[in-house]
Every structure is written in C-alpha cells, then in structure tokens.
Image (cartoon, rainbow, N blue to C red):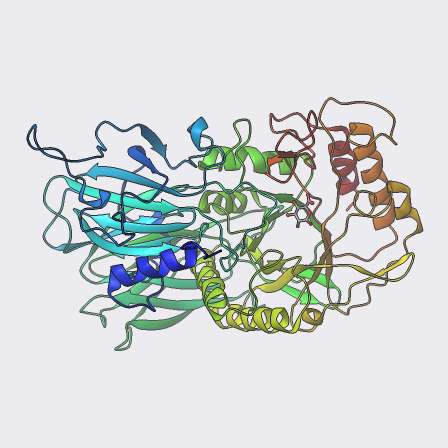
Length: 603
Ligand code: GCU
C-alpha cells in the first residue's frame, strides 16, 4: 500500500517551506544560547495563552498539503460579516503556561500532534536595547512566529533555546504564535519508545530578555582544578563593541579582576581566591557579578572540585558515597510536567528526607529550577540527555540532534556546581553504530566541559548464573561505570540478591544507577505477593544487604515517585502509572522508602 506522507516527509516539506531548501534542519534561526537567564533583566510571558488543537495541521497546510501563506500564524480575524476565517484564537480556550497540555485538557491526555499557542505582549521596547525571546523548553518541535512572520524553529523537548527579536518587535502589543508538535518519531531523541509520558507543549518558562547593544552572553566560572586557591574561567561578549573591559567580582571573597576580550569577544580570567567549598554538608553559594560599562549579570556559584580516583568519586579531595535517588520531571500531587521551583523543592525535600546527597535526573535535562534548587540544598546532580533505548544510532541527523541537546544542556548548566555527572545515554543496546554514536557524544561532552564526570547507564550481563558483570565497550571511554539492574523484579525474585557475586573490577567508580520494583501504595500482603508494599520492601531489604558485599561509589534506586507511563497497563494496579516509586504520586511514603532512608544513614 502506498505509504501516506509520514512525519519525516511532513517535516521536510515544513523545512523546505520555511527556508526554501529541502535540507533545512529544524533548529533554524536560533540565536546562541544566553546563559543564566534568571540573572538577567527579563519580562515573563508565563500565564494565560490561547491554544488551538490542530489535529490535521490545518493551521499550516492547505488541502494539497502545501504550506499555506494563510496559516494560523497570521492570527487573522474576520473583519466583516462576509470574511472567511476558520479559526479564532480569541475564542479558543486558554492554557496557563508553562504547562504540559496532557494534564491541562482531558481531551489531550494521550494527544500527539500539533497545538498552536498565542500570546500577546508589550515588551515596553527601548531604542538602545536588544530583545531576545527565550523558551525554557518546548516538547518536541516548535515553530515560532512573531507578528505574523516566521521567526525560527527548535527540536528537542528538554533544553532551552532563544531567538533575537530586536528588529521584529513593535512598540505596544506584539503577537507571539508557537506551533508545537509532540509527535514521536524513530529518528528523534528520544525515539518512539520511552517509559514516560510524552507530555507535549510549552512546558517551561517563556521570557523576553532585555540587554544593551553589547552584552555578556555566556561565561564559565569555576575553581581551577584541585588547587582550591584560584578561580578561573572565560567570558563571551556579543555585540558590536566587543573589546570593552569586563569585570568579574566576588564580593564575599573580596576578589575582583578586569579583563579585555579579544576581537571575537572572548576573554579568559583567573583570580586568587580561597572560597569555602560547596558540599552537601555546607552548600555555600557565592554571589558573582560580571559587568561591563553597560551590562551586568548576577549569578550564585558553588565552588567545588569533583574527580574519579580509582573506584571512588572524590568531592573536594575526599571520597564521597553518592546516596542517590532517580527522579522523573513529574509534578508531585498533580502529575504532569513539573514547572515551578516549589514543585522542585518538594521532590528534593523528599530526597533529602531519605538521606540522599545525590539525584539522578532521568532521562532528560530537567527544569533549571530543579538544578538550582538542588544546588541550594546541597544535593549533587546527574544530568542526562534522552539518548534512551533504541535510538537511530546509524542516522547522522539523529546524532546531530543529540549533540545539539547535549550542547544546550551543558551551556545552560555549565556553572551549576551541583552538577557532577553528565550522562549521555540510558540502556542503549550494544552495536558498532551505537558505540560510535556514543563515543562521539563522549568526546563532544569533554570538548564542551572537561571539568565533570561522564557516565551513562549500561546493562549488566552474567558471567555465570550468579556472577553479574558489566561488559560494555563504552566502559573504556566513560569516567564512571553506571548500570541498571532489576534483580528481584525483572530478573528472578528478591532472594536472588543474596546469591549474587558481582564482578565489578572496572578500575573506575561504579554506580548502580537503577534498581527497584513496583508497589501500589496501600496494597498490603505477604512479601511474596508482587505489587504489595511488603514485596517492594523485601526487594529493597535484599538489595541493601547485597550492597554491603559490593564496592559501589553510589546507588540511585528507581525511583523517588510513581510516574505516568503509557507502558504500564495493569488494571487496578498500574492504570497508566509506573509504580516503582518509593513515594506514591500523592506523596505517601511506601514501606521501602524507610529501608533506603535507614541504609543511607550508614553511608
Ligand atoms: C528501565 C529504564 C527506566 C524504566 C525502568 C522500569 O531501566 O531505564 O526508564 O522506567 O527501567 O522498567 O520501570
């Protein structure tokens, strides 16, 4: 049967229409990512946006599936009783952005497709300023229009992007329209199969950033290696007058240095300083002010040093055991995508209550609120791009997409001292194409940031019935060997743990990055009855006993809280929810929570 026009063809038509060339990529017209948006002069566009559900792409294509010049991005209204306009944002429903559409509108719970969003705003424009439109994240493809004309596009559901709009905004009201498409595709990142909900929409903050003509667009600032007596980094300027003096000041350290950028606008700096080092026990943050005669950026920086030493992870020169927990970006109590600092703090406080000093933010870069709140609370962070399961490892465009998401993740959080591990994949099946793909990502991650540890979750194998080993070609290129293992859930029953004789002599730190099992909170029975809290509790009891015989650098049980997944269909037990949480999605601790809480007290 002739294949109907598929997503790839539609996107290619879309790309061609947008730019007139067949090989145009989405990620079009992006401005280099502006770092530390919370520390800048911004106007929030959060709040009520109009939205139109567009199941057939009517807002973009004509009936011959050609891009229409009269799409919804024109925001037309009938001017007379005879006018023909078949949509109306004014009369369409509202959504409070940031928010996923699935848990906003019952009609959209399982929806995968196009939704159009509209926001009218007045940026209070000033002649001598530049203006940028910033999205914390949009899942998955975003086409952005301003005042009826195309601005640019972005793909990837969990990283920020921005456009310059200085010459595109009017005095007074401006109309911003975004076409969002969360349709999955095998060549995307992630691919079509994930064990999490495909929450679509404008899921993170939207801001207008106001800057002077020449401004500080990006910077890196950190402890210089393990000297503990020097702080160094670089500043990147943007604008027409790049070689103006830039001052970096840390008032509480009475440290200050002024440098002049080169002709590319880049300036390196170093300053003698002995900061109190950030740690879970003492999460001290220093105010850093970076300024030029016309612009200033404020940040709060955690100065610390992390490294792998043999099979241990060292923080500030001392071995630290990563008492971790995995977390999905799912809002507590209400489900849906987490979107506020308060919701981030709730999840992190639950982790803290379990005596955690580390969170594995799975399986994609989380909201910037989550990373900054973890930093304030003294919780170390594993941050990951969604190269998950069966990615199209032989597709160069897929690799380009993964690299772009990696670069956006590292650019946004480069100065977040709490982040100690960049993770580049999760449970990817070994093949030559996969090994080349991931090795290329490892090299790119190190090129972007050589100060953090690189890891990824691999899978265990068995040398013999009770000797699990990790044998993955990527072990040679990562700094930390992490692996997921579900003994007692997918692999035998909990008592199997007692017979395990792990061979972990990798010469590198090893983290068990996932283990666990499901329980419906409130379901009680014998410890051999699957889905009871007692079964889950016994599984965790068996695991902590097993850990006492292993030489791990850290553990991150799967997972802090139950989360929505279309894969989890057992009626009366799962009902679209993955129940491996140690806490239910309405915040009730299950019995296994206390097994981890007690064991972590001993680490
Ligand atoms: C996998 C995977 C998780 C998934 C979990 C599970 O290891 O990494 O994303 O949710 O196991 O099966 O619940």
